[in-house]
Length: 437
Image (cartoon, rainbow, N blue to C red):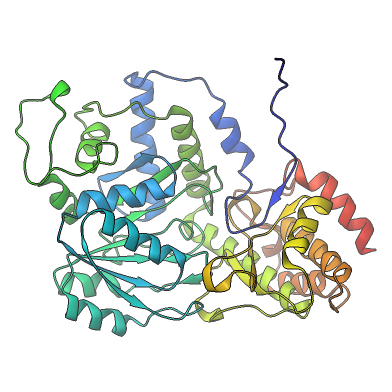
């Protein structure tokens, strides 16, 4: 059977992730493969570790990549830190808090939860009260939960955890690169992320960083596979996963280079390029870019006469939730965005399913043309669906926000230029331009 070369349809991915990858990242992934112990390969691994220390704002030696999606990083941390019977406290304010609970339960941990209404976050005092009561080994918190678009403040939680003898882990999959995260300053013991959000890459690699306290806990459970024994005896309770055993993975990424798995070379290239883009731009500038374009999108949504969901003082910079207007077929509208304009926006989960759409402005798509194009297309889809929207209100309000942000701010300084999204923007821009006239 003859098959043709793969040809995905052009898309502008403006949902909660994945997003359209930066062309530099895609080009990096096409580079030649190297053997896993080639000096050039191990040098790239070391360089990538250094870049992610800057991205996480940490000096942690144990900063590396887990081969797999962002969930792989989450599971690696939890299965390596938690032994059966250990107490874990998980504050839940969206779907991904529930995910932390499930993974911790699979580790055999005794899981305690604290819940709040979706669209809200927790005050530090409420979390400290729960930590004082539960006395957990680990406080596991999502920073930015895309299911609700909320950003949980973390600044005080590291000190709270340390005060009560706990470690602090945060899932920063959706927040790193677009929202402030200071691993060392905030005393975070473990943090994981993914490439497919603000890091402007594809899903498939999970950056991770561990404090010395976390490394000590993991090291107390270190075992080495019999086939590559290095003469050291196993210690403590064996970590329940081989693939996600951070004690062995730390040996692989450390000076010993003790073999664990074959590194996913093309994903290493992608992860390295994602971090390089952010470091070149500067972390403060990257966060400011996401803040600018996220706020412009929010202004445009309100300019159309629509309502934003949740506590806007604690919304992530890079994703927002729009209350679906009455009288419109929500799924049909999303399909029209995709079919007519090549733009993807997201639905939601659980109690918010069918109630909100989620729109992301992150990574390579945190830029002016992507914001304005999405708003123009959304206006046409809403109008066709019978919703009474303000003509030109979305694009107009977003443009006013850019103008008010100051000279030069509207170009999206940093890693993305004026060329715009490759592939999707050509057809979609022309279609929207014609419809919006």
